[in-house]
Image (cartoon, rainbow, N blue to C red; front, side, top):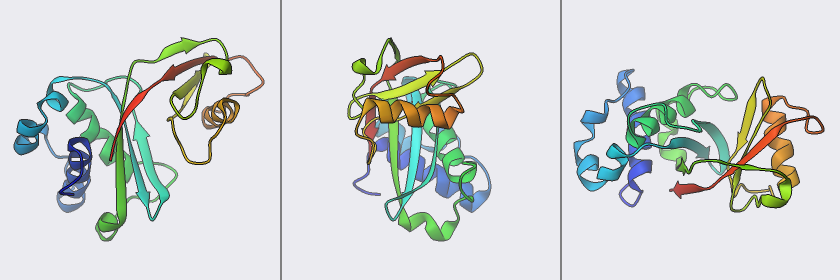
Length: 177
């Protein structure tokens, strides 16, 4: 944890605190991190927190736009959700903490795109949406090499027919390890 970035330290401490106390850590309890990373406590952004265990996805939850008062609060909320409430996985337990690798993605505002020609899965994440639902796929994910593949998976996540009608947006992230 010593060499981890500020966002990852916030995520790790949030999960650890939840496991130890059953409560969500309050942003005011992160005084030292606030001194070292003031911008995380004063800016807002959508945030995704991804957990991996031995290289395999263990949880990933996020927000496409800010839902709290700061990036730090967004990280706290989404780190706890990724660890405890990702419906694809059982909740993380204390014994797993040392085996987790955490990454935090700060989303830049999405921009509409007209076709997959404007996408590059190594650079941009994608949001697909129709009137009922939306799906998101982060950029630079292992095994996703084409924009068509990226859009198809995002549609699948959202339950949208990839051959049907939907809107697309692209976004960049600042990824922290």
